[in-house]
Length: 116
Image (cartoon, rainbow, N blue to C red):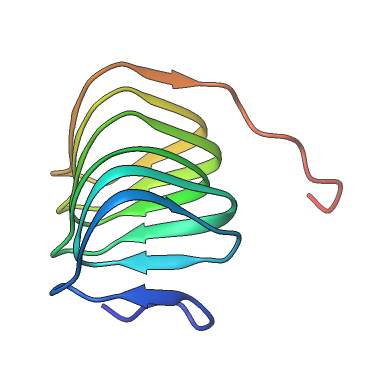
């Protein structure tokens, strides 16, 4: 898989412990323990990623493993290889076959776009 153009990339050999925050899109394929806050950005959890963190983002796409609670103000997508252990609070949720969720899911619905 290839990160979206313009995304900051954190490779699979990188481990981060602590708080990660920013305002741009992020592709994470390494290990993080702590918290992730990207209120205006999209986080993509790559297939090699192991995330042990509470996450607050606009949009989230998961291919790897997430252990922690997730708050997505926009869309959350769980791909086939995704494993999420924690509560999910999102406006919209898409789950592919074979993805795994262990926790509560609360969907708030999305804002209607005038272009639709």
